[in-house]
Length: 263
Image (cartoon, rainbow, N blue to C red; front, side, top):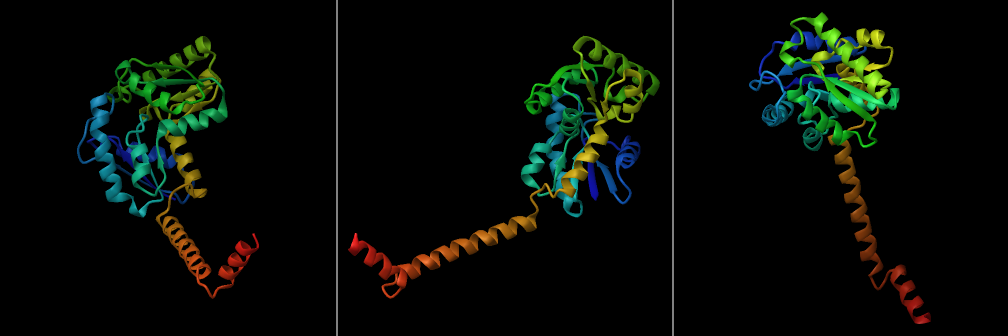
């Protein structure tokens, strides 16, 4: 599989480390290409930034996706993912949707730990769109923004553990989703500390992309063309049969006339 990952930010600061994270979840033979936008916000934590990156992501996907089997957007808000599914034949994967799908398999009461309150309502809004089963019981945040997460990785981990323990104690959650791709890589540490499944957003994205490609869960242009050709052939055959049946010399016409006379 060849996976195109679009980082929806206007810098390349995280490209190498994010690429390594994606590769760590992918089987041998998978090619990961990760690119950032030519311009855009430093992070996607506000509604303005979210709106800004959507057309930029679509443009980048249209420019590059031709040689890839699937597209992923490296942000838990899944910006532009729904739009990409309407404009491209390739599977488009968002970390929030992928994480939630896997969390559904791991437990029945889901908690989400994300970044500071400024972005929290956007996360909740995306989860509200996806969580039709109402299995997400609580969404909480650590007091850090995306740009601060890797300044002190140990402190970030401790804060995520604290919030995960809080979710488990207060809301009885049995699975935790890390609600920011900037928290990717922490899942094993959190899982060991809290004792329940923890879903890594990048890991979930890679696994869902692999499944979508393996199961051909996409609208391939070739398949669409074959379908159109089949429909055209079926319409042509029906029209030909109708024309033949209406001919006075056809057996179909004489049979219908006889049946009408007998009736």
